[in-house]
Image (cartoon, rainbow, N blue to C red):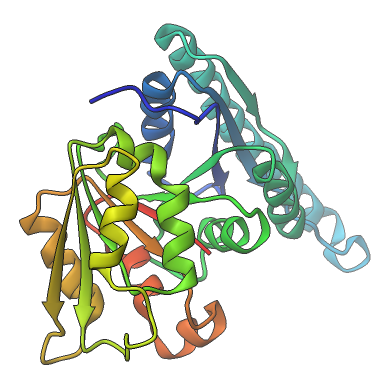
Length: 283
């Protein structure tokens, strides 16, 4: 595919919490994307620092906390060293940080750093309570930048065929605009609207989006899909992406807000939990 243009700074984030068998496909994806774009790669491989009230912990408790903090710090430093080596081998300029921070400071530091990059790449997390899931949400709501959520098994960038989930709303428009570097470089782009999902009478139809993208030199087609009888919009989009052999799905995120989606379920939560391909989100 053609080289990606206008992407010069890529940020990948992960948090080492000491769990066995943790891996990050986002790092490989971000590295290969940086090669394609000729971009600088920054990786924040943080570890979570445990804090215990010393008055209540006792010497044994303090020793356990110190030991665990040392273990997780060592794991994040090992990730950082591997990233440096892989980036050097690929000829990619790379900045790697492995700070040990408290839970709130990890989120705040990452959000601030994200504002200084063109694109954020993070691993998909099945559980909504994981810290790395919080990284996705803080990046979406706190950075003003697009986020690519990478599911397991996608450790290399690909973007020849892209699907846009279009509902005519402002979040979808933002996602399409943020995805333009990928859309211009793609071989084929499909605009998908799920008919019956909501009242689209006052929204911009996919057929009206197509000329806008065509003027950017993007080869685009439009497909209106009926809502499934069970009302599962996420499954409709997953099926469409599979039929289209898409390598990326572009979508506006959190139309109803993260708290409501966390409690009642929603499209963004469903796709972040189970999406077969990388998901470019913007809010």
